[in-house]
Image 1 (cartoon, helix red, strand yellow):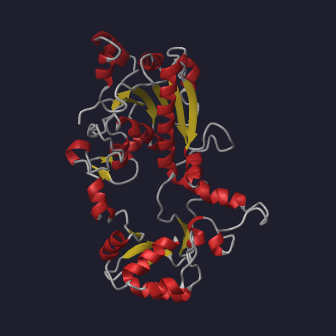
Image 2 (cartoon, helix red, strand yellow; image 1 turned 60 degrees about the vertical axis):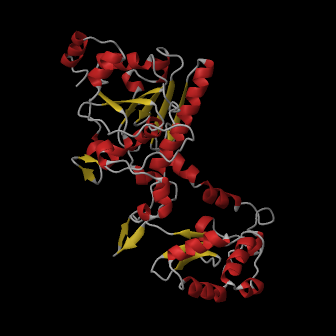
Image 3 (cartoon, one colour; image 1 turned 120 degrees about the vertical axis):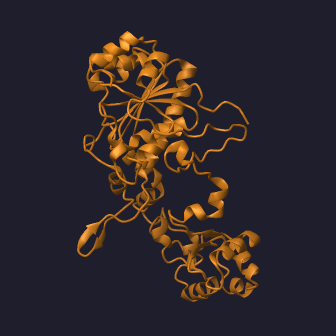
Length: 409
């Protein structure tokens, strides 16, 4: 397989710090040339959070893998000129900071489209360009807390942040990457660029749309909006809260001390499970309804299933599900996931030599294209001179002058 990577020939200028830079990680993985513009001293993501791997954070190594780095002081006229020169032949500019940060430096969308009418300008921020929280400083958990995805736990009389997956800080860049590619397609077709924004808080809420939309639907009278027919139309809490007392859709402990997730809420899957066990008596006694029947509150069946699942290991139950077309899923933790056979079949860790730490590559797989392996995240300003020479034809005297003026480091 040797077809060109999907985004080969796309060039993106990224002005970001910290997590929002993940927007272009998705794009560089698919072949885009991403030039990361860093302030004097570099993006302090290199010192943020843990683990620190050989002196730099894993967050930096992952988010900025495959990119090229320039250190440019955007507070100087010379620095502004460098960015405009880069934008002339670029497809997109990413503003990964508080909204309006580039405009204050003469590098907003209106400034840049005067240089390149087809430029795509994407602003990714915490709370977006409008609203009362627009200028609030924030970090990743803030977006999930705002969106109702994570609530405080109480330990020894103190509030605490519970273990949870981060949604907004990952979903925001993913939505942004989708928008950038879509906008570039439009710009190449029409010759006209565009400006758009994505807030990581908005992205967190959008990812959890089912729960918020369910509560909104329940504001309407019960004559118009009911629960599931299989639950006798009872209005249950949305999402997993409404499934907490489920029986045919529930976690079960296994003989080896692990757990599996049983999901036979469809009548056909429930029958497959009972048939595989040679326990059709269970199906005949509790056949359930055709769709979405979790057997909520059936304590007798719950006890029977608890005892049944304790008779085999988790791996044996997964194999049982495969053989009998019964939905039984593995239950992993972030630490044990890498040992799962499905994970091992689908993911190949990058090597320490490639990226500085073992990482997961993009989950996208193309039938006729081998994507380039990710490369190590750059040091601050590692490619400054190279880019000025190769892309802008600046000579040694010009580069020396810029360095003397403090525009580059």
